[in-house]
Length: 105
Image 1 (tube, rainbow, N blue to C red):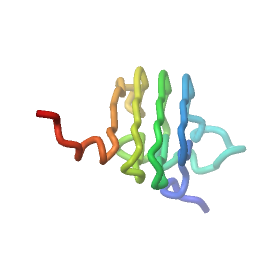
Image 2 (cartoon, one colour; image 1 turned 60 degrees about the vertical axis):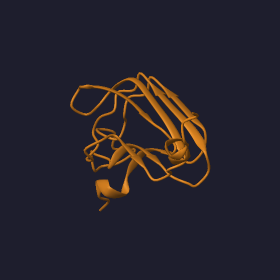
Image 3 (cartoon, rainbow, N blue to C red; image 1 turned 180 degrees about the horizontal axis):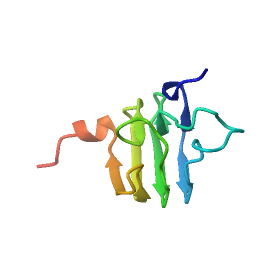
């Protein structure tokens, strides 16, 4: 039997834009009978990429946060979304290179 740790609702390895998506990993037996995924979004790969999520209802995931970031070069912007606890979720994840750049003098 599958465990939630091996299931990810959305997998992103390149530029991605998602608008008004409700997590569908829960009660849809055609997709999974587990009823839960590890997260809403798994971001992986090594390339610089951009991801935006707007108006997504992220639910039925096991992790503490809805997005797992394994690509440190990803720029991720989340706006007007709702997490599994029905709380607003608005975040920005900057690429590692951006965080390491020195500010001009």
